[in-house]
Image (tube, rainbow, N blue to C red; front, side, top):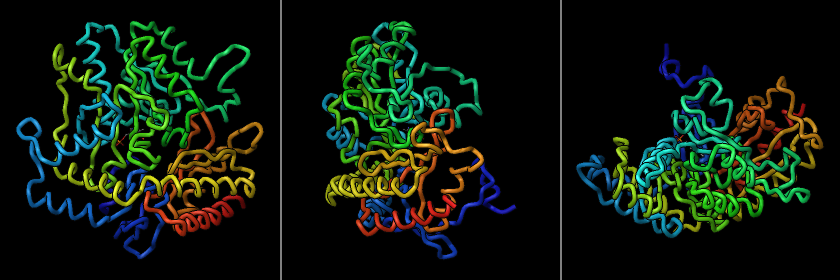
Length: 439
Ligand code: PMP
């Protein structure tokens, strides 16, 4: 048995062995090269092997690579907490570090619960979420995940949480506003809170712009503000899961800022560490943290939380994004990418929708555009198209969203350093892959 067979990641599929990664490209040990069109899993926002980040990490390694957070604080963790709080909307000034997105979501769910207990509302425990949505693979995060391929194999969830549909107006053929009833898509949250009993509802968790499971679903106008209003009306905490949408690829540190909505908590990870180190965080309102410290407790923590090497990498990543103007570049290149993907709709009738924001773009496959019926499962679009792109030297991120919600969708999300020439390269490679798929 070789090393790769021993690595048990729940698949028998063999993967090439990575030899080197630089900028937007990855090479394997046989010298094959791929354009990393999905930044891994929307992680490597600033591209691979950025010398500034590597220098910052080397410098920190010479000082200390670990300090247990309950014994010592470190310069990088204090500075990064400060930096994140400054980037976050006013009022969100408390940072709890984690090593990834699932840990950040767990931290948010537990802080929400601690807060309810601290303010004498212990009967509030239900966290409403949406489907489709992905919030992580730990059991708490999974219980608010509305994505059958990840949840069904473990059903029933240890705690089954209520879910409402995400506003997939395109797929549902359901208008955002129904003039007959005056109903708005966001009102489904209010209806669900009332159905559950407002006194039992703790929080609502939502990706401002949907990531993996929805395929870059951008909320319709008015949706985010209306969600905030409904949460306020019923004393429900609003958690923005920005694990994919945060970090700059949508043109802001936090995608929620596009709608000026201030949540009670934000979870981040992926792009903030940009693949250099495992890094995540929960950013919470000062008022929530203060209340919990005054009247309750929050016995919670991960051993590697606030790891100084991870925080040093995170600080350097934020410096690079700011100093190199990567957020404006993400928006400009994102527009080009979106336009080029939309143009592919003329050529391929089976592309049913192109959607996204900044450098988080997605296209969805259908067998019929009018009915939006999915492609037959026998075509196995998920594997076939990904493999075809892979053979062409392009990595795209696919989701078999056939969890009952939509067709297979594919995310194109290159690093924020991507150039116009590289957008051309992505489209050329994708076109060749789509031609092969169409045959
Ligand atoms: N939330 C969202 C929105 C995600 O996309 C992900 C990962 N894809 C997670 C949470 C979980 O993050 P991690 O895999 O780092 O635990």
